[in-house]
Length: 220
Image (cartoon, rainbow, N blue to C red; front, side):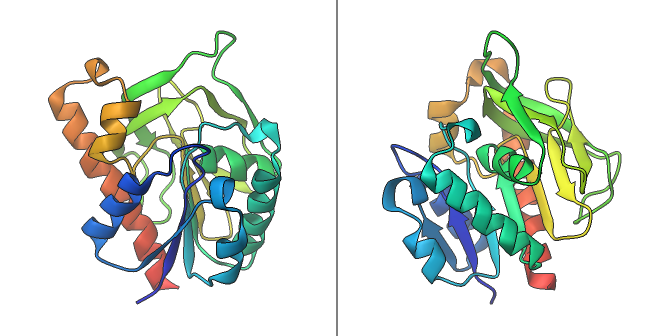
């Protein structure tokens, strides 16, 4: 069975709850790394067949040492053909690493938190053009311009570049949180902004997004 590294970009409290959720649901080996708290050492030592980059309360423009190292390493992995899934901060980090631009969602630094429907714009990596997905969201920054070698994978009424994919290599990313656990939703999402059915669909569609990535890893 191929092995996948989960790169938690948390700067204070590790996202063990989201890691545990994916481990339980998919019942496969995942490596856990937290470069902001514990350095890049474990990520450099362990060879994985794919990588999932989690979100963070930090911003890509802070240019912290671990952010620079992580962006460089993940770009190298993508260009070598190793599958990578970027989530929220990971989505922004890799867009910026490949030449895109990231910025605040608006001048007021509004927090988009809750659940929203996204539309898939390209048939790639198990996604079908025209289908709708629902994802949990919690972000104040977003991708403003996509890199030239990327395709616009998904959009929504709140966020133009809600999903991206590389044209040639096995990479895709979402601004939302498909990895979200019950703990994450209870503590980081404004639940009053969504109905119970929207919440449940966000859980289901999130797992489907991660499943598409795992299938991509297993296919290579």
